[in-house]
Amino acid sequence: MLMFCIRGRTMKNLSIDFLRSFVIIAQTGSYTQCAEQLQRTQPAISLQIKKLEEMVGEKLFSRDKNRLSLTVAGSKLLTYGEKIVAMNDQAMAEFGKPQVTGNIKLGIPSEFSTILMPKIIRRFTQTYPEVSLEVHCALSKDLLTEPLKSKFDLILSLQETPDPTQDGYITTDQLVWVGSQRFVNSVPQKLPLIAAPSPCTYRKRAINLLTAIKKPWQVVYTIADLNGIQTAINEGLGITVLAKSSVPSGLHILPSSADLPELGYMGVCLLNPQKVTSKAISLLADTIVTEVANF
Image (cartoon, rainbow, N blue to C red; front, side, top):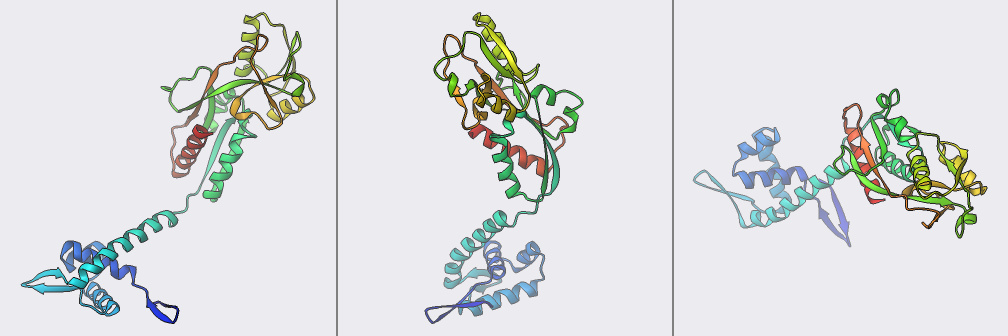
């Protein structure tokens, strides 16, 4: 029996195992049922109750014509015992979770690789350090096309038109014009565009809208990597289109104007292309959905 002192007083610690047996007996009225539930022998349960009575210095049960009932002290202890056992079980459920392991292959759009996903992945790997993540960045349309599609357990992708009824839909993200300080107040007559290669949805959206308003444009630099796009923008080569949630710090969101039309919105989805589930995959999916929806 463990003991500790508070200001000179020796304090006793009640055994959780003893309390659990006591609570079950009080609830069922039977030593036999308690032994069956806990998969112990009845003599072992009887010994626990005897030791618990010694700890508290009171009789906890009385018998009247084979009927088991709580004493006054037993009724008082039951109030504490139920709470203590419940709190113990809650704590063990929270901190005694079985270790999650596995290998997960995740495909994500390139533009989410520097802002959004690192935060999500860091949080997940800190919580589940035994899970190995392999992350591949590419255009959404490439991720959803073979041969890449079949290589992933999960794919975070963009949809051109937000559709909450689509399988895996998470949220909607606004598309914005992005550039350096040079383009904040005005843009050239012929708009210099920095874009990912076709069939990039952002590229297509920008070109279609600029053509519709007869705004002259030219793709001056094509690169799929977001870091490369950011470098080109910082060098003042032109402007680009990004999801608002993925705009790197240091770049400027340009206000819409007669020369820069509203770009609208995109949907964000999380897909399980192989329809394969595991504890690790489910936990990562839940983490991504929660974080993306609240970003």
